[in-house]
Image (cartoon, rainbow, N blue to C red; front, side):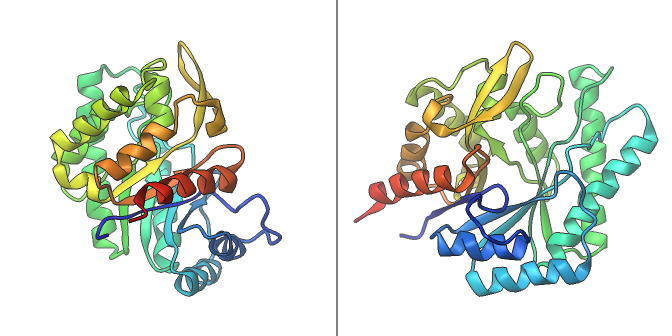
Length: 279
């Protein structure tokens, strides 16, 4: 099978006895998972030595590495010091991943603020182009994956992210299906709903399905969007149709689970995925 999806937790597995990221990598491997996301969401100042220890664990295990940048990013803030600080958060995350051997940098781009949607897109495009150039200039072995956001006040609907990826060369897009579900107020309720999302992704770039970076977990939401993450057993959104489509569309890439039970749900999805791909 030339195409494959691997699964992993968003952070150190809950049952991991160690508390370092390197411990988490080895624990995820021992559990039989194929990826892990480094949760630098509360700060990304990582010493090079510590990042290199993570890299050693990645090299030993062969896991795919990504890292989630801090939550505090606001790339199109009307206050330029906040924009500068946002660059630092993303670049600090990128350096940590680089020293760990390279991988994907995931981040929430920020909020609309006083911008209308059209102006917000124009502002965000300039910031994304700057970041792509900066990563290249610094020769960091990472790729940038802004994530679909879950709140209506946050810039980053699925359509906005796909269009941005199309317009900014070198930029990718992390598809968080729980956030799509929240922004559509429960719009991923059936397999047909998921098919529409896969169709939309494919309409922008057929090759995108070959190298996905996805977040999948349950979500609780209100009329303002995402409130909190849930276990996949809540079926909000239903998880089995999503896994089935990964197989049916012959997708490749990584699925990171950020549910309250991290590795248990990642393993549950992986088990079902593998049951569908046994030849």
